[in-house]
Length: 401
Ligand SMILES: [Zn+2]
Ligand SMILES: [Zn+2]
Image 1 (cartoon, rainbow, N blue to C red):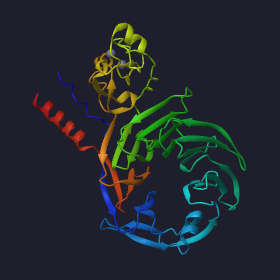
Image 2: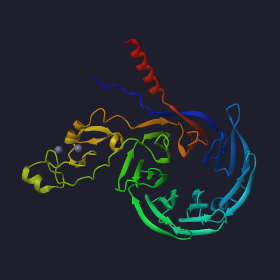
Image 3: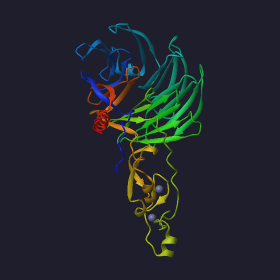
Image 4: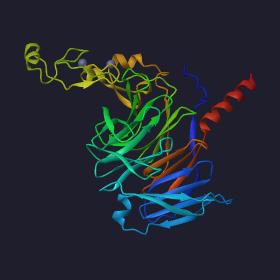
């Protein structure tokens, strides 16, 4: 009998609210102005624009600022502006000469009055935003593409193009290397830190997301496999305990983080299939002794055993191990996975543009995506339609009884 579908209170669906498509070039960074119906965009066409939502529901520019400086100068420095309260005026406040190469990530830490930045010159620097003074610098091993900071412990998380995340402890004018996290086979493309659960999420061009559970203190790292392309953005919605991730192919995945997931097992080494004991192709001795043909080695994603193709012919999703896509499992593991175990722990949505940047605004729950199509889309998170249908359907049935 088919399992009864329970309405999921967690299920949310991004619903397109507005589009802004007045750009000549791709918008590399954009943020939703908290509590205002506004958007600030920084585009490759050298413009900074502030957009306010009018009564018509359309976004109109209230500020259009073109960088007066040369291209190279613009992207090597950090420019600070003061925005007027009505968002109609932007006044240059300070210029930080921070990097010898293009700036890659900027993070402002209000609590510390610190401005953290990284550049293609492989320097990670931090400035005091009050005095404008550079406080310290640290040489990273590769270009940095993700940067997060924990105010409470003053740890900076620095994700780079080599695929590793470096954890630095910052003092006022010095820093020390704490540790590095290695788990990705591609560049780190995005980082997201949740200070409440003390979990760090890293997204990569290898299509995966790793959840580094620092708060759990057991060294748990869980892989989330739900993207078919480069992960481009990560945001954590703490009030709904959902991780929002997006990728180059335009997909937005909303992960339910209330679920306890398990780590994937280490892959075991063996010279023969751990199920049927047939030798693998490099095991000449056993092949000769038992007059058997050598087989190719595979691994079951659930138990980690080395198995032959025949003993692992089935595929399954294992959402509780982060596999939202079907993966290879051995026959006995396939039997042990119930329909309930296969219930997805994430929802999948199509933004219909190739995402380069994403921003989530927690007070309104609105999400912004910027694409290679030079369009900004603003999304509202709503109860998913299918889940409402399920609720209505159940209500209708019970009335009939
Ligand atoms: Zn076998
Ligand atoms: Zn198995």
